[in-house]
Structures are given as C-alpha cells and as structure tokens.
Amino acid sequence: MKFVALIVGLAAVTLFLLSYQQKKRKNIIIFNATSRILYIVQYILLGAFEGAALDVLGTVSSVAAQNKDKGFAARHTKLVLVLMNIALLVAGLATYKNIFSLFPVVGVMLHTSAFWINDEKTIRIVSFLGSPFWLVYNLVSCAYGSAVGDVLSMVSIGIAFFRYDVKRKKDFDTYLFDFDGTLVDSMPSYVSVMLRILDENNISYEKDIVKIITPLGYAGTAEYFINMGLEMPKEQIVSLMNEYAYEQYANNIMAKNNVAETLKKLKRRGASLNVLTASPHTVLDVCLKRIGIYDLFDNVWSCDDFETTKANPEIYKMAAKRIGVPVETVLFLDDNPDADKTAKTAGCAVCGVFDKSSEDYMEEMKKICDYYINDFSELEKIKMK
Image 1 (spheres, rainbow, N blue to C red):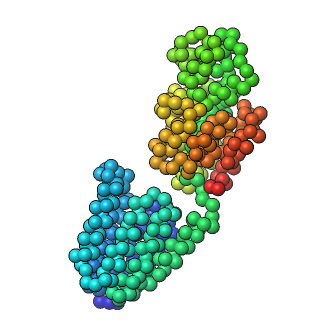
Image 2 (cartoon, rainbow, N blue to C red; image 1 turned 120 degrees about the horizontal axis):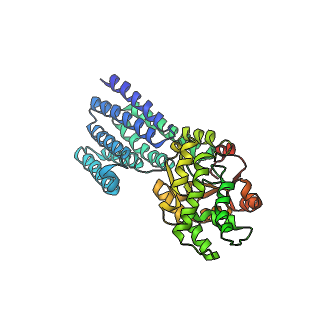
Image 3 (cartoon, rainbow, N blue to C red; image 1 turned 90 degrees about the vertical axis):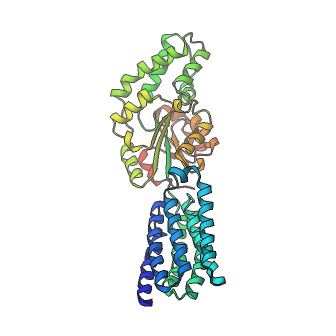
C-alpha cells in the first residue's frame, strides 16, 4: 500500500511542479487543484487523514478561487476567503494528533489563500512560504513522495520566480489604445471635419487647434467651439460633426501600417486590448468593424461612455477599474501629446505613437512618454520598465 501511495504521491508532485511553471493564473490553479486530488488519495492510503481532510478543503478553496469573479464569491470575496480558512482550521483541530498536525493547516492556508490573489508573482511567493510546513508534515507522516515534491516545488517556484519575475522584463498584459491617429489613419479626415465647421462659420483659429481639441471628444470640442465664438447650439454642432464624419469612417478610413497584425499577435499572447477614444460610437464602431479589428478588443469605449474627456486624468483610472487592473499596469497609446501627458498623470505607462498630424510635437511626446513608436510593429517588443 505504501508503494502505491508513493506512486500516487509522485504523480501529484509532478502536476504540482508543473503548476508553477504556468504563466497564467488560471493554468496555475487547474494544475494545482488536480495535484491536490492525487495528494488526497495518497494520504488516505497512508492513513494520514488530517492531510487528506485539509487537501479536500484546499481543493475546494482552489476551485472557489478559480471562480472568484463570479456569483456569490465575486460579491463577497473576503467573506468566502475567511470562511474557507476557518473551515481549514476547524478540520485541522478535528484531526489533531500532535503538534505536527498543525503544520499542514498553515501550509494549506498559505497555498490556497495565494490563489485568491490576482498577481502571479505574489501567488508564487505566498505558495513558497507554505511548502516548508508541508515538508515537515510529510516527513513525519512517511509521505516521502510528497516530501520530495515539497523540496522540488520550492525549487520550481524559485525557478519560475526567476524566469517570470526577475530575469525577464514582463510584457504588458493590458493595452489601452486611442483610435484616431493611433489605430487608424484618420487624422486628416478628423481635422477636415472639425475645421470645416469653423471655416463655414468664419471662426478663426490658432495653429495648435488640432492638438487642443483632439482629446476633447465631439461634445467637448463643440463646447470649445462655442467658447471661440461659434453661435450654434451644442447639439447642432455635434450633429454636424457626425454627419460630416460618418461617410469617411464608414467607407474610406483604413488601419495604420501593421496595426491588425500586431493586435493579433498581442491577442494570441493573451493580452487585454481596449480602445478609449474621443470619437463617438457612431463612427468608431462602424470603422473598426469595417477594417476587421473590432472583435480583437475586450472593450471599445468612447469618452461618452465615461461622461468626461481624455483631458481628465480620472477617465484613465475609470477605464483601468472597468478592465479590472491597477492603472499603473496599463500601457496607454496615443498620438496626441496632451492625452499622453494626462494619462501619465493618471498613473498609466504611456507610449507615444507617430502620426503625421502630430509630427511637430514628436520631441515633446518623447519627453513625456515612457516609450515611443514610429510603427505598430515596434509595439510587441516593448516591455515593462
């Protein structure tokens, strides 16, 4: 029976070791949960019932952690985590034999609690801290396969930590793209639409008008035009903008060089791709769908969705919150220096994008931004600093 237990334990060890070599949180949890089921069988074969009981609860906690963004667990995450840890503690006390019976209680609480954390680096650190407690218990319980596994798991976690968290600069997982001038070559059309309204009404404007109005959105630009002296209701101005712009966006405007190819590569890598633009959905959605990249994005937002403009730092924080990530982990890309500066103020990492319309501000953008690209093909090489 001990030989069978040893084989089962080694199989559990193999899956456990592989779990920490997974880059994605979901895969870490799946491998780990399967490993725990085999550990349960091993402990039952050895008569180490406290270990079996704790691993049963540990497996339940791992499964719950995998679904922590759904249903009751999503609404009451802290409560579920506290209840799971109480259950683990009660199980440990109920099967108490000696002081060593408490070691797996601490170990499993650390291992399972780690999976309620979103950051993979922290998962590895907390899980590593739980392994020595299991090692002591497994040696005392003669679960030598698991003991070997505990040693190897600590080595494995250490290797993964070095691979993903120390040695290699991490890829960005979350991207937030501007639309006009960044994803699509629309700035000449955008500029002609906006300036046409001023020209038709004999309103003079400064050379930097495009730089100023681009982050404002249609509604914000309409308000700016009114302040410049345009005697027309805001709603009428916005209606004209939509009318003049729709034909161009629906039929003529195309993606910039290498945009589609690069977005597809980032998507295959598992990155979250999102759009935040001043343009309204009336032109935004129809254009992205026509050029075949709309479905690559997890979220396609107009400033209208947030009832503010890209001149407000809060919009970037709100976007990050809706995506479900810290704002500092988001790479924001825009061809407009004012939008880049505001996103930087909000806490985003920022990448300036070359566009002919903002060529005069290229050096300014390079000073503001963390990164700068002349072509989208350069984007996949950018790493977190």
